[in-house]
Image 1: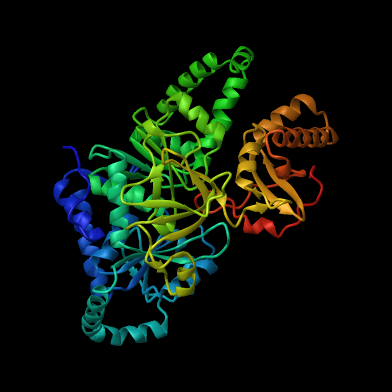
Image 2: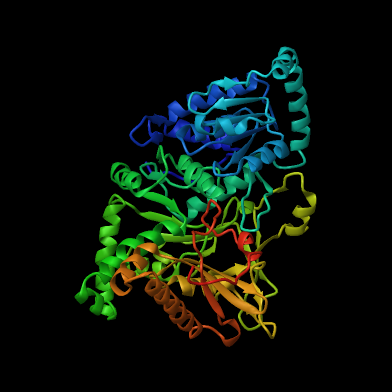
Length: 569
C-alpha cells in the first residue's frame, strides 16, 4: 500500500489516530535488539498514558516536559501529553542542570518524563511529579510539603479540569492550538522557548511528504536527539504519518554501536548533521585513497577520480545497510569537499535548511535534484525572500513566511516582535541568496558577519569551509581580533600523528612542522579569497569546540577569548 500525505487532520493526535487505523499491524517504534511496537500497540499505550495524565490533573494547556535520551517511549510520552490536551516541552539531555531548571520554571511544567539516568538532575524541579520514561511510574520525591499538597489536590482535579477546558476553548477560538515549546540552544547562548502549534507541525509534515517519497515499508534509524525539532518533526512525526517504522539505539551512536545497528535495521531513511558524514569521509575514505601510491597519483585525474568515488560510494552504501534511499542532512553547512564526493559517489544525500522557529524545514531537495552548495528550494506553501539584497552579490537576510512559522517565543513578546513582522514574515538572521532557478544558498549568520576595512561583507563560514577542506583540519572557527581576521583550527589528531611520526623525531620538530603547516594553510586559503578577507593568523585550538546539539560551534564562547597566544601549543 502506498501512503499518502495526511489529510483532514488538525492536531498531532488526529494525525496519529489516522495512521493507527491505517497501519494497525505495521511496526511503528522499535528499540534495536529490543522490543518492536506496532501502530496498534503504540495507540493503546498512548491512550492509557493520556488517561493517567488526566487522572493526575493534566489537562488542556498544561506543560509537560520530556527530559530523556532517545527511546521509543519518548515518542509515546510525546503523543500521550498531546492526547491529554497538554503541551510538550522537550529538553535536550545534554543541557546543563541550571538550564534544565530554568526551562522547567519558565515553562511552568507541571510534570516531567525523565530517564533513570537523568532523574538525579531534577532534585530542584518545580514540577509536581516526575514519570519514569522506561516504566511510566510516577514519583513525587517524598517531600512533606508535596505530600500535604497532594491531599487536597484530588478534590480539586475535576473542577480545575473543567475550568481549564473552558478557558482553553475560549482562547482556542482566537489563536492556533499550542503543541510544543522548544527551548533552543543556539550559537549565541540565548535560550528562547519557541511555540509551535499543531498546525505548524502538520503543515511541515505535509510539505515534506510532497518533497520526498515516504512509504509504509520505510525504516528510519534515529541518531539525533528527539528533543530537537529536526529529528522530532522529520524523523519521528513524518514517518509515523506515513506508516513507516522508527528504530532507536539504546546508547550513543559510536562506531561500535552504529555499524552493527545499520546492518540490523538496514535503514531506508536517515537524518544526520554534517559532522557524521564528514567524519566518515575524512577518517575513512580519504585515507583509503591516499594510502595507496598508485591511487593517490591517479585520483587527481577526473575520469579516475569519478570511477574511484563511485566505487567508494557503493561500499559506503553497504556500510549503511545497502538499502538507503534518503540520507537527509541539515542543522549546519555540509563541507564542500564532502558534498562533492557524495555527488560523484552517487550517494543518495539530500540537503535542507530550516530553523526551530519554522517547524523546522524551509527549503529542501530530493537526491536527484540537489545542487552543489545549495540548501534547495522553498518547500510547498512556504515563501522565502531575501531582504535588502546586496546589489553585487545578491545576498541579504533570509525571510520566511508560511504555515510552518512559529506562533512566537513563549512569554517573550519583545523578542517575538523583533523577528516576526506584522504581515507574518519571520526574519531568520541568516544570510543568503537565491539563484535564478529558485535554489537557496546560505552565506552565514548576520551576527557572525565581519565588516571589512572598506565596508565589505566577510562571511566567516565561507573561510571556515576553505580551511576545513584540508585533511589535517578537523574543524575551524574564524573570528575578528581587532582589525585582523584570525582562524582557530582544531587539527585531525589521527592524520597529524601519522604525519609527525614520519617527519618529526622530537617535540620541537613536531611543533616546527605544525607551525609550517599553519603558514602553508594560511597561504593556500588566502590565495582563494578577496584581499579584504585574508586571514592574518592561524592558531591551534587545543580541544574540540563546544557545540550545539546540531553540531554547530557555540561561537559566543570563543568571541570573547583572546585570539593571541602560541600557535604551537
